[in-house]
Length: 537
Image 1 (cartoon, rainbow, N blue to C red):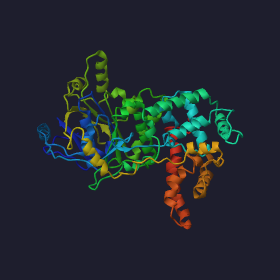
Image 2: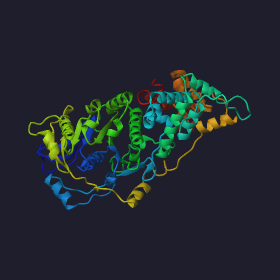
Image 3: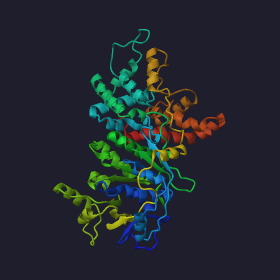
């Protein structure tokens, strides 16, 4: 906190959030220590989120935020100097200057934003199990399926790939090949049984859960081209951070898909970004709205990994801000890591509500001038209790403030405005058309028809096969096969940099390329130990 000033604006070191008896600043160097925005519905959480997002964007920090109601989309358009906005700004010593911010819209369903896709392999068995609400036995079978895919060079890209693989690992002595010979998938079934008893009933249950996910639109999420998170971390011509908005109104109808998708994003950021230490400002800030969905009914193993990723991703230069109604929605281990707090009003009409208010008040560093629990119930719309990290990273005493007005538009944009933004998007055309490459489904179909080459451990051919052999020699067979076949995953990350180079330059580039590959394919395999597990059991 700092003393009040007559003329206040963001600086290179901090963001102006609001003002009461003291001026509330969010220090950029401490913004990657994560944060929490809480309050009842209609108390101003979205406006606070927009104010913070605008401040980060001005500072050149990329922002990703889920937009549940569509209100946050207004950040892309110039704000209006309405009387109440100008008045509030003037009372704070702030000159209101209408502004707008470079924005990219994303949508898992590809309807109101660029499509967001991930491969089944990238999601991993633990997150898929969470998405499908599988029990321990079913999750174990899914792990077996992933291991069999790794060992047989079967790339799991879209939903039909994992469905075909699950069907292929079910014991069945009645199946024959196209010419009446022995079942061509017998080696795959035998490999699956080597990891434990895979029953038809269990696989059938998993298949039905996939059907439910398909009916909820999950089919559109799995596929290629898969999202590159580097497209989130961009700046515009003025050096401002790009504001990436996930259109989540429809996605919220499938809350488990929503929560799993955002958790996958966190794990991918954790995996892909290098260690950065303490930076003057974050590389990216991630706002997770309706955060309680991430923690509801989550098994202990998943909760441990969430806590681990939240704790460690700070060193990658990423700040995570959870947005929910009450601090008690967030587990204590995670809550302890959220140093920057904004608390809007809570209502207490029942003893249970009063208990929740008391619990919320206890998450702040006390201020002898304030009865925190009482003030939480008295806050008006746009008011908040705040405590941001300061100095050596200790939380400031809680203060009551009026949140500054955003500079961009408050409220949703029109469909025409959204279309204009998407037509001028820097990623226009990159993700808009789905690609159905040859993967597990097609390979298994060919094998049944007797036209596919026998499984070779996924080593691929040509230079990709040679690279896979090198990785296998260095890191061991399982790692060389990665999470997809070497022919798919290693090719994707390595051959981009070795293609079109003379053969003499390949060796020089190989170490550099292999580093990227290890960070991508092998790194993702290792992250499956942190968020997915190669074989958690």
